[in-house]
Length: 149
Length: 82
Image (tube, rainbow over all chains, first blue to last red):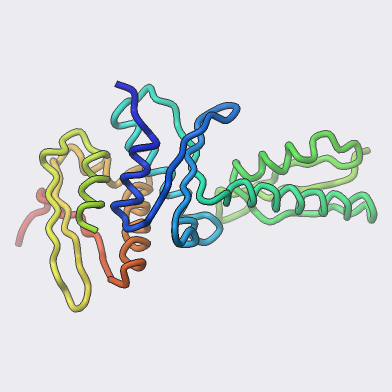
């Protein structure tokens, strides 16, 4: 029996005490579950931390029901889409700084998911190159931008 | 909150029939004692405690929304009693 990730998520957030409308859609490489609810800030948390934990729990529950089912991505009121735009804008701004001054710019430590967005945003830029360097005390890495020689 | 907790924990384990949630009132706070089948304890804790941390964080979110204080305690039946 296939798992109904949408219904599972809806039950989850309703039992938690949120008024929510949950929709499911197919995007490129997977399934996106979108939650429209009252009080979205609570479900998102600081820097999307609560949203990540919610997504993790939902995926654990899906896996328990069907280990072959693919993972889903959760979003609350377009938070992920907006965070992505903000991050791309920040990456482009840093690239502009590198272009103008020829300096090396280091972005703050990010997880793999966010770094991928930055690398992809700048991969076609002919003037800068990006690479990740480890940061002590965390599993996150910082991206270095420098002029292409 | 209890219904949510039971729904999620039962969805995470191999033996949902053995999941028991007991609310205990302690100075303005509800502590949910969670008892599981011994083989399911690891599943609810998760790698580096990821699952139990996520459960506690979401419990916090739900209870804060209702203006309550809640905590989750995993009761290990195998622990020696003395």
